[in-house]
Length: 143
Image (cartoon, rainbow, N blue to C red; front, top):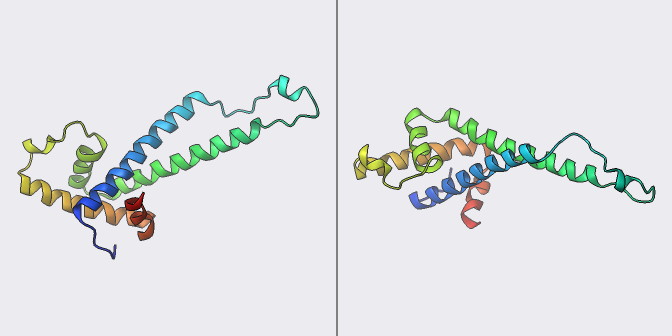
């Protein structure tokens, strides 16, 4: 990226990306469990020839929504495959499976933690810039 971001800004962007990622995973699970994607006809709605059946539109919208969510999740998985093992472990502890804010204290000193955080966020931002433009990434700061 051409624009230099502070650690706080990078952290905010990555947290927002992973919040959307986790929400997308839950939405995909919900859509898979609660929507039947096979065409169904409600005989009571189709009975009158003057009415127009709108069930197909909703089904198409749900299929498109599910596809967008799956594309987003797949993009994040692609980013994960390009990250180094150390960076992915850090991302996993800090953003994906965030259970305790002081998880790092048993592994790193404070200086090592921040050094690793800088390195991990820089690597993540480089990988995400393959899929998104700089304007798309910076727009996450405004939202």
